[in-house]
Amino acid sequence: MIEAAFYFDLQSPLAYLAAERILQTMPIACEWQPILARELPSAESFQTFRCRKEEEIFRSEVELRAASLGLQPLRWPDPFPFDSATAMRVATYAKSIGRVVAFAQAAFRQAFAGGRDLQERDNVLIAAAACEMHPAAVVQATERRSVAEQLERATTAARELGVIDVPAVRIGEHVFHGERELERAAAYAQTLAAEPAGVGAR
Image (cartoon, rainbow, N blue to C red; front, side, top):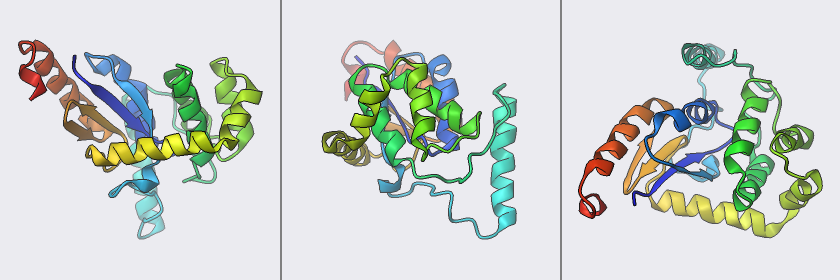
């Protein structure tokens, strides 16, 4: 069986674009794994623009990419970037109860289709409610140290496997970074799936 994982942080608009495409693009099932991008060695912080013009160009490129993919017009949350720590703890909790895909998609859409700041707990709760996660359980999850530690462990494990930024897709031992690499990841997964049993595991 081919191991495959999709790594994301809800702060990243590029991960949002990938999350909207990955289910249709990948020929095999991918585990959705929330991680903290700020703990990765080469992650884009979205705070290092040299000038306002550079930031405007970046935003315009993301908006055009979203439009070319047939997504809703991209709306930027204010502030952007936002601190995703709380939302990512909820994503980690959602993963533990089998709802990480539904929650991540709802939260991404709150942020980048609805323009809502995921630092605000109410916006996170709206996303959680969309996939029938009980608000009291969600609030408790954001406060549990065990959930935060689980997120930290997942981030460390991803980093050790070669994930340096989000979005990323890992197929076996190979990691593909960036939303535009989804097709290459899919082609690689298809190649492995076509190999005789045991050959692709090396």
